[in-house]
Image 1 (tube, rainbow, N blue to C red):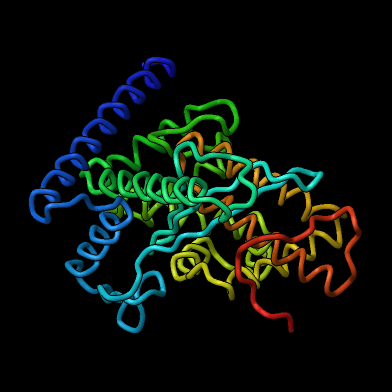
Image 2 (image 1 turned 60 degrees about the vertical axis):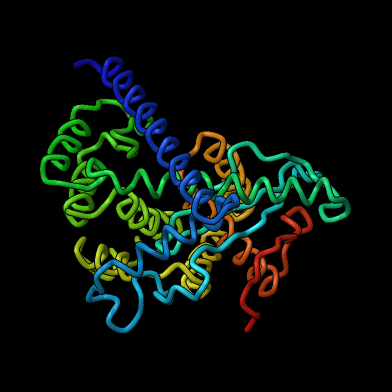
Length: 331
Protein backbone atom coordinates (compact mmCIF):
# COMPACT_ATOMS: atom_id res chain seq x y z
CA UNK A 1 0.00 0.00 0.00
CA UNK A 2 1.50 3.36 -0.97
CA UNK A 3 1.55 6.38 1.33
CA UNK A 4 -1.26 8.30 -0.42
CA UNK A 5 -3.62 5.31 -0.23
CA UNK A 6 -2.72 4.79 3.43
CA UNK A 7 -3.39 8.45 4.25
CA UNK A 8 -6.73 8.34 2.41
CA UNK A 9 -7.83 5.30 4.39
CA UNK A 10 -6.65 6.88 7.63
CA UNK A 11 -8.60 10.08 6.86
CA UNK A 12 -11.75 8.09 6.05
CA UNK A 13 -11.42 6.14 9.31
CA UNK A 14 -10.92 9.35 11.26
CA UNK A 15 -14.06 10.89 9.73
CA UNK A 16 -16.05 7.76 10.54
CA UNK A 17 -14.83 7.73 14.15
CA UNK A 18 -15.55 11.45 14.54
CA UNK A 19 -19.12 10.86 13.34
CA UNK A 20 -19.45 7.98 15.81
CA UNK A 21 -18.23 10.15 18.68
CA UNK A 22 -20.66 12.93 17.76
CA UNK A 23 -23.52 10.41 17.70
CA UNK A 24 -22.48 9.17 21.14
CA UNK A 25 -22.46 12.71 22.52
CA UNK A 26 -25.86 13.47 20.98
CA UNK A 27 -27.28 10.30 22.56
CA UNK A 28 -25.79 11.32 25.89
CA UNK A 29 -27.32 14.78 25.53
CA UNK A 30 -30.77 13.35 24.85
CA UNK A 31 -30.61 10.96 27.80
CA UNK A 32 -29.49 13.74 30.14
CA UNK A 33 -32.29 16.00 28.92
CA UNK A 34 -34.83 13.19 29.35
CA UNK A 35 -33.53 12.51 32.85
CA UNK A 36 -33.15 16.05 34.12
CA UNK A 37 -35.50 17.94 31.91
CA UNK A 38 -32.82 20.41 30.90
CA UNK A 39 -29.72 20.62 28.76
CA UNK A 40 -26.35 19.86 30.33
CA UNK A 41 -23.30 21.91 29.35
CA UNK A 42 -20.34 20.30 27.62
CA UNK A 43 -18.16 21.35 30.56
CA UNK A 44 -20.41 19.48 32.99
CA UNK A 45 -20.54 16.41 30.73
CA UNK A 46 -16.75 16.37 30.63
CA UNK A 47 -16.53 16.67 34.42
CA UNK A 48 -19.06 13.84 34.79
CA UNK A 49 -17.23 11.63 32.29
CA UNK A 50 -13.81 12.08 33.91
CA UNK A 51 -15.20 11.87 37.44
CA UNK A 52 -16.99 8.60 36.70
CA UNK A 53 -13.92 7.17 34.98
CA UNK A 54 -11.68 8.07 37.92
CA UNK A 55 -14.17 6.77 40.46
CA UNK A 56 -14.45 3.39 38.73
CA UNK A 57 -10.77 2.98 37.76
CA UNK A 58 -8.66 0.65 39.93
CA UNK A 59 -6.03 2.32 42.10
CA UNK A 60 -2.58 2.04 40.53
CA UNK A 61 0.72 1.58 42.36
CA UNK A 62 1.66 5.16 41.52
CA UNK A 63 -1.56 6.37 43.13
CA UNK A 64 -0.85 4.73 46.49
CA UNK A 65 0.57 8.01 47.79
CA UNK A 66 -0.84 10.38 45.18
CA UNK A 67 -2.97 10.29 42.08
CA UNK A 68 -1.47 9.62 38.63
CA UNK A 69 -1.53 13.30 37.79
CA UNK A 70 -0.85 14.74 41.20
CA UNK A 71 -4.58 15.47 41.59
CA UNK A 72 -7.17 14.24 44.05
CA UNK A 73 -9.27 11.30 42.83
CA UNK A 74 -12.22 12.68 44.77
CA UNK A 75 -15.36 13.39 42.79
CA UNK A 76 -15.75 16.60 44.76
CA UNK A 77 -12.61 18.27 43.48
CA UNK A 78 -12.60 20.06 40.15
CA UNK A 79 -11.15 17.69 37.58
CA UNK A 80 -10.63 20.06 34.66
CA UNK A 81 -8.69 23.34 34.53
CA UNK A 82 -9.46 26.22 32.17
CA UNK A 83 -6.88 28.81 31.15
CA UNK A 84 -7.52 31.94 29.09
CA UNK A 85 -4.59 33.02 26.93
CA UNK A 86 -4.11 36.28 25.09
CA UNK A 87 -1.65 36.30 22.17
CA UNK A 88 -0.31 39.56 20.77
CA UNK A 89 1.73 40.51 17.73
CA UNK A 90 5.12 42.24 17.89
CA UNK A 91 3.40 45.62 18.16
CA UNK A 92 1.44 44.48 21.20
CA UNK A 93 -1.92 44.19 19.43
CA UNK A 94 -4.06 41.30 20.59
CA UNK A 95 -4.55 38.83 17.76
CA UNK A 96 -6.13 35.95 19.65
CA UNK A 97 -7.84 35.29 22.95
CA UNK A 98 -9.04 31.78 23.67
CA UNK A 99 -9.81 29.25 26.36
CA UNK A 100 -7.51 26.25 26.81
CA UNK A 101 -8.61 23.22 28.77
CA UNK A 102 -6.30 20.94 30.79
CA UNK A 103 -7.39 17.39 31.58
CA UNK A 104 -6.21 15.66 34.77
CA UNK A 105 -3.88 13.32 32.87
CA UNK A 106 -2.13 16.22 31.18
CA UNK A 107 -3.79 16.58 27.79
CA UNK A 108 -4.74 20.07 26.59
CA UNK A 109 -7.40 21.15 24.09
CA UNK A 110 -8.74 24.43 22.77
CA UNK A 111 -11.95 25.63 21.11
CA UNK A 112 -12.67 24.86 17.48
CA UNK A 113 -12.85 28.35 15.99
CA UNK A 114 -12.86 31.03 18.68
CA UNK A 115 -13.37 34.73 18.02
CA UNK A 116 -10.03 36.48 17.76
CA UNK A 117 -8.77 39.90 18.71
CA UNK A 118 -11.26 40.54 21.53
CA UNK A 119 -10.64 43.74 23.43
CA UNK A 120 -12.39 44.97 26.55
CA UNK A 121 -13.07 41.32 27.21
CA UNK A 122 -15.51 41.72 30.06
CA UNK A 123 -17.17 44.92 28.98
CA UNK A 124 -20.27 43.61 27.24
CA UNK A 125 -22.71 40.75 27.58
CA UNK A 126 -21.98 39.71 23.98
CA UNK A 127 -18.28 39.22 24.69
CA UNK A 128 -19.05 37.24 27.86
CA UNK A 129 -21.36 35.06 25.77
CA UNK A 130 -18.56 34.49 23.26
CA UNK A 131 -16.28 33.45 26.10
CA UNK A 132 -18.89 30.98 27.28
CA UNK A 133 -19.12 29.57 23.75
CA UNK A 134 -15.33 29.18 23.58
CA UNK A 135 -15.28 27.36 26.93
CA UNK A 136 -18.06 25.06 25.77
CA UNK A 137 -16.27 24.44 22.47
CA UNK A 138 -13.03 23.52 24.25
CA UNK A 139 -14.97 21.17 26.53
CA UNK A 140 -16.67 19.55 23.52
CA UNK A 141 -13.32 18.94 21.77
CA UNK A 142 -11.89 17.43 24.97
CA UNK A 143 -14.98 15.27 25.54
CA UNK A 144 -14.85 13.92 21.98
CA UNK A 145 -11.19 12.99 22.44
CA UNK A 146 -11.88 11.35 25.82
CA UNK A 147 -14.69 9.24 24.36
CA UNK A 148 -12.62 8.39 21.28
CA UNK A 149 -9.77 7.37 23.58
CA UNK A 150 -11.99 4.66 25.08
CA UNK A 151 -12.22 2.81 21.75
CA UNK A 152 -10.34 -0.52 21.81
CA UNK A 153 -8.41 0.58 18.72
CA UNK A 154 -6.81 3.37 20.78
CA UNK A 155 -5.03 0.92 23.08
CA UNK A 156 -1.40 0.17 22.30
CA UNK A 157 -0.71 -3.49 21.58
CA UNK A 158 2.33 -5.46 20.45
CA UNK A 159 0.79 -5.69 16.98
CA UNK A 160 0.42 -1.92 16.83
CA UNK A 161 4.01 -1.38 18.02
CA UNK A 162 5.29 -3.60 15.22
CA UNK A 163 3.12 -1.98 12.55
CA UNK A 164 3.98 1.55 13.67
CA UNK A 165 7.73 0.99 13.93
CA UNK A 166 7.84 -0.89 10.62
CA UNK A 167 6.08 2.06 9.01
CA UNK A 168 8.44 4.52 10.70
CA UNK A 169 11.49 2.65 9.40
CA UNK A 170 10.05 2.63 5.89
CA UNK A 171 9.68 6.43 5.82
CA UNK A 172 12.70 7.87 4.06
CA UNK A 173 12.07 11.57 4.60
CA UNK A 174 11.90 13.74 7.69
CA UNK A 175 9.32 14.48 10.29
CA UNK A 176 6.21 15.45 8.29
CA UNK A 177 4.94 11.85 8.35
CA UNK A 178 2.64 10.37 10.95
CA UNK A 179 1.13 7.00 11.75
CA UNK A 180 -2.37 7.06 13.28
CA UNK A 181 -1.77 10.60 14.44
CA UNK A 182 1.69 9.97 15.93
CA UNK A 183 4.56 12.00 14.50
CA UNK A 184 7.48 9.94 13.25
CA UNK A 185 11.19 10.51 12.71
CA UNK A 186 12.91 8.67 9.88
CA UNK A 187 16.40 8.26 11.36
CA UNK A 188 17.29 5.03 13.15
CA UNK A 189 17.84 6.63 16.56
CA UNK A 190 14.40 8.23 16.30
CA UNK A 191 12.81 4.91 15.33
CA UNK A 192 14.52 3.11 18.21
CA UNK A 193 13.36 5.74 20.66
CA UNK A 194 9.85 5.64 19.20
CA UNK A 195 9.77 1.86 19.64
CA UNK A 196 10.94 2.09 23.24
CA UNK A 197 8.30 4.67 24.16
CA UNK A 198 5.54 2.61 22.52
CA UNK A 199 6.72 -0.54 24.32
CA UNK A 200 6.80 1.39 27.57
CA UNK A 201 3.15 2.31 26.93
CA UNK A 202 1.95 -1.22 26.14
CA UNK A 203 -1.71 -1.70 27.11
CA UNK A 204 -2.08 2.04 27.65
CA UNK A 205 -4.18 4.33 25.49
CA UNK A 206 -3.02 6.72 22.80
CA UNK A 207 -3.89 9.64 25.07
CA UNK A 208 -1.61 8.25 27.78
CA UNK A 209 1.11 7.78 25.19
CA UNK A 210 0.67 11.39 24.07
CA UNK A 211 0.90 12.64 27.64
CA UNK A 212 4.21 10.81 28.14
CA UNK A 213 5.46 12.08 24.77
CA UNK A 214 4.65 15.64 25.79
CA UNK A 215 6.88 15.36 28.86
CA UNK A 216 9.69 13.77 26.83
CA UNK A 217 9.39 16.51 24.20
CA UNK A 218 9.60 19.23 26.86
CA UNK A 219 12.65 17.57 28.43
CA UNK A 220 14.34 17.38 25.02
CA UNK A 221 13.41 20.91 23.92
CA UNK A 222 14.57 22.57 27.13
CA UNK A 223 17.93 20.79 27.20
CA UNK A 224 17.10 18.90 30.40
CA UNK A 225 17.26 15.57 28.55
CA UNK A 226 20.77 16.31 27.27
CA UNK A 227 21.82 16.86 30.88
CA UNK A 228 20.40 13.46 31.84
CA UNK A 229 22.40 11.84 29.03
CA UNK A 230 25.57 13.58 30.21
CA UNK A 231 24.99 12.16 33.69
CA UNK A 232 24.84 8.68 32.18
CA UNK A 233 21.08 8.10 32.51
CA UNK A 234 19.90 5.16 30.42
CA UNK A 235 16.83 5.34 28.19
CA UNK A 236 14.81 3.38 30.75
CA UNK A 237 15.78 5.89 33.45
CA UNK A 238 14.55 8.72 31.24
CA UNK A 239 11.23 6.98 30.59
CA UNK A 240 10.73 6.20 34.28
CA UNK A 241 11.44 9.81 35.18
CA UNK A 242 9.13 11.19 32.49
CA UNK A 243 6.33 8.84 33.55
CA UNK A 244 6.62 10.04 37.16
CA UNK A 245 6.57 13.75 36.29
CA UNK A 246 3.67 15.99 37.20
CA UNK A 247 3.59 19.11 35.03
CA UNK A 248 3.33 21.80 37.67
CA UNK A 249 5.09 25.01 38.64
CA UNK A 250 8.03 23.10 40.15
CA UNK A 251 8.57 21.21 36.88
CA UNK A 252 8.24 24.39 34.81
CA UNK A 253 10.69 26.19 37.08
CA UNK A 254 13.23 23.39 36.67
CA UNK A 255 12.98 23.44 32.88
CA UNK A 256 13.02 27.23 32.79
CA UNK A 257 16.53 27.19 34.29
CA UNK A 258 17.69 25.10 31.31
CA UNK A 259 15.99 27.56 28.96
CA UNK A 260 17.75 30.46 30.70
CA UNK A 261 21.08 28.74 30.03
CA UNK A 262 20.17 28.55 26.34
CA UNK A 263 19.25 32.23 26.34
CA UNK A 264 22.65 33.09 27.82
CA UNK A 265 24.34 31.02 25.12
CA UNK A 266 22.09 31.98 22.18
CA UNK A 267 20.74 35.49 22.63
CA UNK A 268 17.07 35.77 21.68
CA UNK A 269 16.33 32.07 22.25
CA UNK A 270 13.47 32.69 24.69
CA UNK A 271 11.73 35.26 22.51
CA UNK A 272 12.04 33.08 19.41
CA UNK A 273 10.69 30.01 21.21
CA UNK A 274 7.87 32.02 22.76
CA UNK A 275 6.79 33.27 19.33
CA UNK A 276 7.06 29.76 17.92
CA UNK A 277 4.99 28.25 20.73
CA UNK A 278 2.21 30.79 20.10
CA UNK A 279 2.23 30.04 16.38
CA UNK A 280 1.98 26.32 17.19
CA UNK A 281 -0.87 26.93 19.62
CA UNK A 282 -2.90 28.73 16.96
CA UNK A 283 -2.10 26.31 14.12
CA UNK A 284 -2.45 23.11 16.13
CA UNK A 285 -5.71 24.26 17.70
CA UNK A 286 -7.25 24.99 14.31
CA UNK A 287 -6.10 21.53 13.18
CA UNK A 288 -7.79 19.93 16.21
CA UNK A 289 -4.54 18.63 17.71
CA UNK A 290 -3.66 18.02 21.33
CA UNK A 291 -1.94 21.19 22.63
CA UNK A 292 -0.08 20.49 25.87
CA UNK A 293 3.40 20.68 24.32
CA UNK A 294 3.13 24.21 22.83
CA UNK A 295 1.03 25.31 25.80
CA UNK A 296 3.76 24.32 28.25
CA UNK A 297 6.53 25.66 26.03
CA UNK A 298 4.83 29.04 26.18
CA UNK A 299 4.41 28.95 29.96
CA UNK A 300 8.01 27.87 30.50
CA UNK A 301 9.27 30.60 28.17
CA UNK A 302 7.23 33.25 29.99
CA UNK A 303 8.53 32.06 33.34
CA UNK A 304 12.12 31.87 32.06
CA UNK A 305 11.78 35.37 30.59
CA UNK A 306 10.65 36.75 33.94
CA UNK A 307 13.51 35.02 35.72
CA UNK A 308 16.09 36.04 33.11
CA UNK A 309 15.06 39.69 33.17
CA UNK A 310 15.01 39.61 36.97
CA UNK A 311 18.52 38.13 37.14
CA UNK A 312 20.28 39.87 34.26
CA UNK A 313 18.02 42.63 33.06
CA UNK A 314 16.24 42.03 29.75
CA UNK A 315 16.39 44.11 26.63
CA UNK A 316 13.38 46.20 25.74
CA UNK A 317 12.97 44.22 22.52
CA UNK A 318 12.01 41.12 24.48
CA UNK A 319 8.41 40.22 25.25
CA UNK A 320 6.40 42.19 27.73
CA UNK A 321 4.88 39.49 29.92
CA UNK A 322 1.13 40.05 29.93
CA UNK A 323 -0.41 36.71 30.73
CA UNK A 324 -3.20 35.46 32.94
CA UNK A 325 -1.09 32.55 34.23
CA UNK A 326 -0.01 32.57 37.85
CA UNK A 327 3.74 32.22 38.23
CA UNK A 328 5.73 31.25 41.33
CA UNK A 329 7.18 34.11 43.32
CA UNK A 330 10.71 35.15 42.55
CA UNK A 331 13.40 33.89 44.88
